Length: 223
Image (cartoon, rainbow, N blue to C red; front, side, top):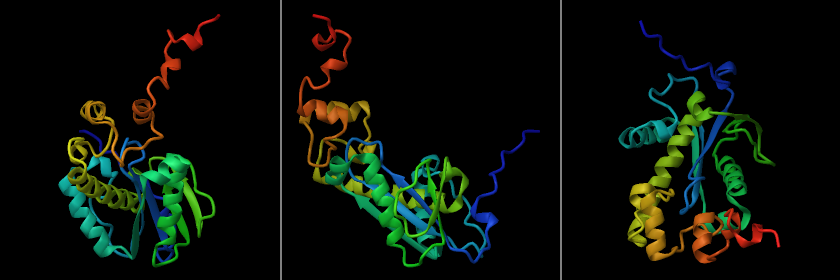
């Protein structure tokens, strides 16, 4: 008989149900275009857990949309924020994500006692205590919920950008560096929603910038 892998007990489950715990996660750190989205969610842990919560990347789109509506209906509080391309290029994607996490927590209508944040790094100057949890979107229901809200919101925004900037395929690849996206970048050049600080985009704007990375580059040869 095949054994089923059980989800380990979450950090939130060890706390009294009356303690407000926010899950925080992002969507869109890796793409070459579009904002990074961050969501924070406080679930009502006194109620029966919402079935089907998981890392948003593991769920079909239709299931994510269904859960998105249920999370918004049942959560005690939630927020979704976007950090735009200009800010990403100004401070870098890591700092932009940390900024989004702070803003998402600050935007909650209720003040959490604890924030559980997906990953291994914590933003500075948060409004509450916080723990970083690696693979938290698969381990902590509140982080899973935040992951779903962030991804659904970002995917919808990328479909809107596809209508504004036709030809790049944003509705399909959501800004990620797929072969189709890279081919469109070469044909059309970057649009206003492309991240200039990301190497594939910057290389098109500044030809030759990354030639030094090649073993045959003149800069790497001894004179």
